[in-house]
Image: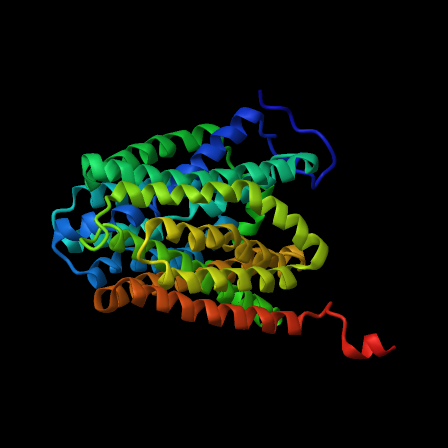
Amino acid sequence: MRSAPSGPPGSGSEYRQLGRRDIWLLTLASAVVTANAYYIHPIIALVAEDFGVSPSEIGLVPALNQIALALGIFLLLPLGDRFSNRRLATVFAAGQFLGLVAMALATDFRLFVAGSTFLGFSTITPYLLPAYASKRVSVRRLGQTTAMLTTGVIAGILVARVGGGWLGEHYGWRTVYYVAAALMGAVTLLLPQIMDERQKRDESRSGRSYLRLVVSVFPVVRRHPEVLLSGTIQGLGFGIFLAVWLGLGLYLTSPEMGYGADTVGYLAALSLMNVFTTPFFGKWADRIGPRRLRAFVALIQFSGVCLLGVFGHSLWLLLVPLMLMNVVGPLVDVTGRMTFLTQPPDVRTRLMTAYIVLMFTGGGLASWGATSVYEHWGWHGTATLALVMSAILLTLALISVRLDPKRPRDTDAET
């Protein structure tokens, strides 16, 4: 049941409180709307073969999807200060539905790319739901609710990559997008039923110019420049993730290895360990600081990436670097967000906007770069690209530790 508003102002009580059923449904919605960007990973070779395009050309699909997502975040997310999350989430979910339908029905590769790009541009709902839920639960339930929605995101990525690989291998890649479109259609109809409109008193903020809302990101970032460093580090980390998995999608299904798309999906099940490891290391970050932990996990990630080329000849040996990278990969993001989410509440959303834009821009560029490199130099080319990116990430993470304002200085030690 939905509980009635209660409690002091500012605790989320001025809104209708979300019940357990509502939170479960929002978690399910988070999984579905997040999954759409990851279906391409295990089936990328099947799509390329069907359209008769090269690895570099098929790389445009995830690349433009991620760059369009970054652009959508920058241009559309500020609308949350003018319109209700319910209305925006429903409209953008409908946009994702249309993008998926276009991809499923596309007979021309250009139309498929256009559908994927529009899908990326419309993927705003995953970033609206946490803000919506945080205002409608008590402070005592905020951590639990946030964790639930995060679990939904992880589950969406996992199901997309495992389920997408299995469906693509046994029923064709178009079936993947037919199923995805059906799920998005259901979510589009579901969201207006479980979300409510913004309270009338909040509409006072709608008088702010849309252009001012967008442009206001820049002075905030100028006052908090570390978000650029954290965003760049996360862009590299997300880029490594996409580069490796897109490369695996092409490599493992090639004549050299001879596996099916379902095998690529099964490998993605390694992400399940994140459900258990990320909370543990998150507590560690609270103790030693996010910058120090980020440098540590960057070193582990670099070690794992070094093994990609060495173990590339064996699927079983590849499990070693993939497990290392899966454990620490999400922690780059968690620690990156922790470096600026301690700033005043009135600037956190805009700092997060800049951070996410950098993240998906890096992911988009790496997606195209990885498939292009694979076309010319195969798996070892992709592994080398990931190694270079990982080395840069480690260097920037170490620089961040040196710049940490809370780090003890030599003069302090002498004193």
